[in-house]
Image 1 (tube, rainbow, N blue to C red):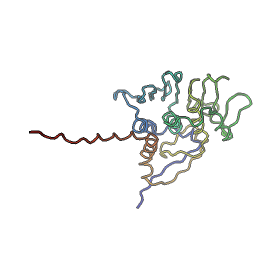
Image 2 (cartoon, rainbow, N blue to C red):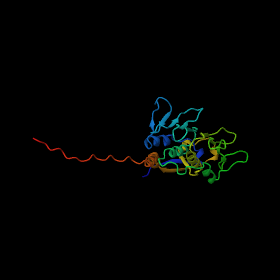
Image 3 (cartoon, one colour):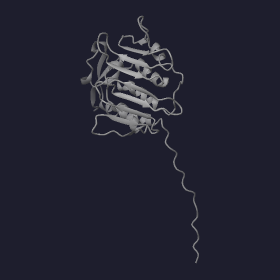
Image 4 (tube, rainbow, N blue to C red):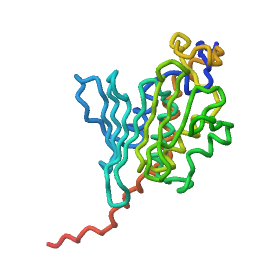
Length: 251
């Protein structure tokens, strides 16, 4: 007999709430080799990439973004930073970190972050710039007109405080921001525990509950981690030492 559990399927995904942080941190550590060096007595997580240039910090501070991803300046590019609020769905942040750690690099170096949103029928309001979701609960805009200007994503309902914000400094690679906007434009619902459906903008969500195999939920993170690990080729096996004959013993 298959054991099932109830799951809530929520759309649009940007209103689904934060979700499990392990969806981001576990694959970074186990599949991408990011090391952790945080103090277990402090309520924060610090992960650093193998090349020591990139860092993810999750810090539960009610007055600041919970998630920060930084890339130090190097010979190839200037430094940059991306921040995400506490209620940013982990699926959206994971789109960013998955693109960041992809060993194949960007599929389209000149990717336009606005393109996935326009394709999904996001529109430009008459009284302001940027692009707004069809339901009016999310906005993406570039805070300027040059390639060095930052990007801002904000979700919420008119006359209420924002639910979450994401901010990308001007030097953040465009393909990483495009990974986020592609996830925003994705109309596939995301799953949550029915007891943890956010109350904010509840009337703007489409929520349906279904019973799904418990095994599917229990092993979802393991499957995700394995898929990401498969992107990194295994190091070649060390060649066996050349065979040499034993020296003859002499009397």
